[in-house]
Length: 315
Ligand SMILES: [Zn+2]
Image 1 (spheres, rainbow, N blue to C red):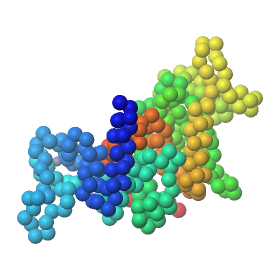
Image 2: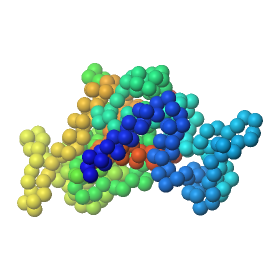
Image 3: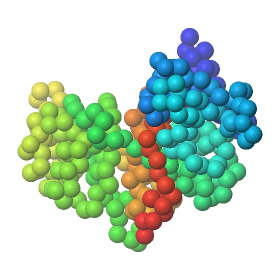
Image 4: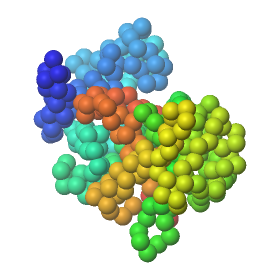
């Protein structure tokens, strides 16, 4: 059983590789990832209740119809699989997008834009922008994502080149659950409190180190446990059987830092949040196979437009 499942999942990645250079195959893959139950109109969300028809073969106009165009019987507008996604208005062939999506979804320690540029054959600048669009889609939306609950470990670290001032990053990790990550301007009560309010349910038991910035904000939470790292305390067994530690949050950071050293090298403060969110996405889907993660990601590429101006105008 397990072997055949693994085989099927492996095929999802193999399919992406095989589709390189074959736009029809790549479009079929992307449609299958985005619309596992058949096409859905991105404008009116008609999922086939009112007929959706494929226009390709029926074209009689002089220009012909672009490939993969559907007609929605409800809003009477046309759409393709890229409308409203991170691929919209991109001039990069779809098969190269499919390949880039596969690479970023399956590389455990991430992948550099430079390597994507070499592997899929686009310029470095294009690869860099594609990677940022993909990371943008991987970013969890706090308005729709569930808040972390149960036991939540919160820890802060500093990321950046040795010589320059480093940027503080807060990881909020539900033990045996999901992780959220926030880049903050400075480690203050106000900023830590804002990150906690955005990501963690007030019903959670929050574990932190002894940093004084957590104390006041966490009075509003159900319980606050601290471990005192300066006294070499890394895990404490409480009388009620629970364990106080921030070990999970720390392992999140150690993996993130390995990606920075191994793949991304230098990342600027302006883009750090997107890199960190890419990392949280893979952490949150760590129990999935690469194929399942990739198919699931196909559902996240909607409503996540990011223009080059938005990423490049941060000076
Ligand atoms: Zn429609």
